[in-house]
Image 1 (cartoon, helix red, strand yellow):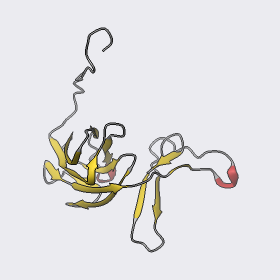
Image 2 (spheres, helix red, strand yellow; image 1 turned 120 degrees about the horizontal axis):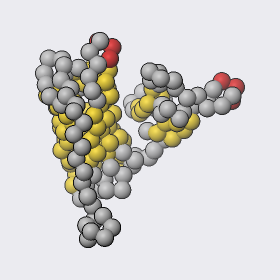
Image 3 (cartoon, helix red, strand yellow; image 1 turned 180 degrees about the horizontal axis):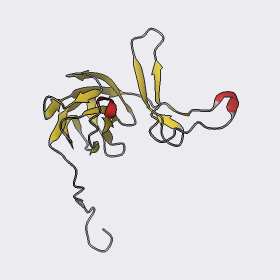
Image 4 (spheres, one colour; image 1 turned 90 degrees about the vertical axis):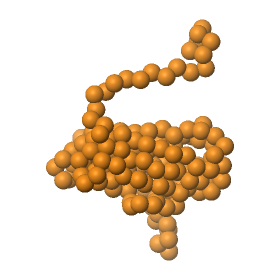
Length: 168
């Protein structure tokens, strides 16, 4: 803070969320990762298809000089979630322990380990047919944009933001 002689201030806010469940694991990189400028964002969004819509949460992983980082995200147990793990400059090449769907119905703890390599970033805007402007998802409308290699050996993707843009 300015005038306090401190370089940063941490503020903890009690949100009253049910955080009896947890998703944890390790993020492993092909070289020492500097996540200070572009931190790794881990997001757990509720998957309400089973009728039990939990409370999502997120974690920001930042650090420098390590080839692996541990993480933990507290969420409601008894629910399912869509998990997104992303940062500029890193591409996910694998996950250990399952895919991007997290189910905490049978257990209050799930382990997901991820591997990353240096990668570029794809950004864009989804336009309406005929160039009639930018498509912006409505309330409770979730659009997934994916890109795949022609040979099928790789893919990436991510959600369409409310302003009609995507980054992955």
